Each structure stands twice: as C-alpha cells, then as structure tokens.
Amino acid sequence: MSPPPRRHYELKQRARRQEETRQRIVDATVQLHREVGPARTTVAEVARRAGVGRVTVYNHFPDEPSLLGACSAQFVAASPPPDPGPWTQVQDPRARLREALAATYAYFRANEQMIANVTRDAATMPALAELVAAGAAADYQEAMRDILLAGRGLRGARRRRVRAAIGLALSFNAWQSLTREGCSDGEAVELMAGAVDAA
Image (tube, rainbow, N blue to C red):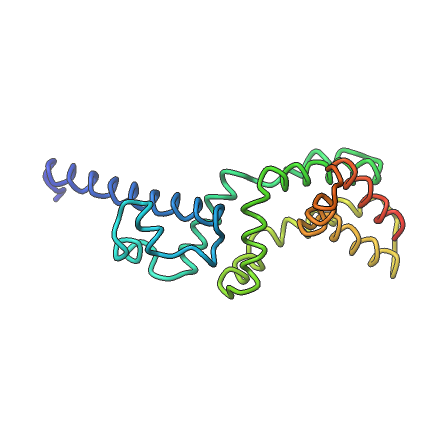
C-alpha cells in the first residue's frame, strides 16, 4: 500500500530540505578551504556559514574524510582540470607538450588559492593526503604523462628521465615557483618544455 499523498509530499519536502542543508554545508566548506585551507577550517565555522548547528554538520558528515570528499567532488565538478583529449591529436610531441602546459598553467592560475591551500595542508592532514593520493588527480597525472610521452620514441633511462621531467613540468609546485620568481605563464611553459627536451 502506497503512503497517503500528504505523507508522500511531506517526505519529499523533508528530503529536499535535507539536500539543501547538505549543499549549504559543502558550499561553506569549499569557501573556507579556498580562503584559509582545510587545516584551518573548523566545524564551528562551517556550521556558522551554512546557518546550521554543529550537530547538523556531523549528521551529514560524521567524519573528516566524508566532508573532505564531498568538498573535493564539488570543487572538481565546478573546476575540472583541462581535457587532455585534444592534445592526443597534436602529432608533434614538443607542440603537444607546450599546448598541455599552457592549458595546465591557465588552470593553476584560475585555481591557485585552492590548490595551494590543499597542497600545503595535505602535508599535515593524513585524511587529506590520502584523498589527494587516491583521487582522480593521480590517475589524471599518469594519463597526462602517457599522452605527453607518446611519439617520442624513448626507451630505458632516457624515457624514465623524460617522464620524470614531464611530471615536474605538470606540477603545481613547479609552476608556482616559476611564477613567484616573476615568470609569466608563457615563460614558464618555455622553461619547462626546455627542461623536458634537455632530459
């Protein structure tokens, strides 16, 4: 027997309110991670910004990994990394690398504060470090290296060195270090592409 229409409506309304509350909590967490970083984000401040009590935050996210995971998923959905698909169509490996680096560095530029905070705090938060290591970002980096190695005809130690240099060129820390020293994104592309060629 199906529930009465009124009861069914109330259940739907309650579920909608629960989802809205959950979303406010995630939105507040993403904002705080961008502003101060995950390590400095407190449940009390998340609750205050979301307009709920601390118990409500814990009801939706009973532990740190669940809240970190929801925050990460929302950030990636709103700010996905560059699509490497078009780069596979570029035949020249050097041109492919420069195109990939330009897109990657533009992504870093647009999301610098969040990436910097997460990178910094992963060193002191095991749950965050585990999320970063096990997340889609690690698979994405591996796929990028494979795409950017293709067509270079390398073997053995030279292949290993070039793969490592590509990994360095794709890293946020390398980009941030170069741009903090005054390099433009375009100059950083050329410097790192040159390092890969030299490897």
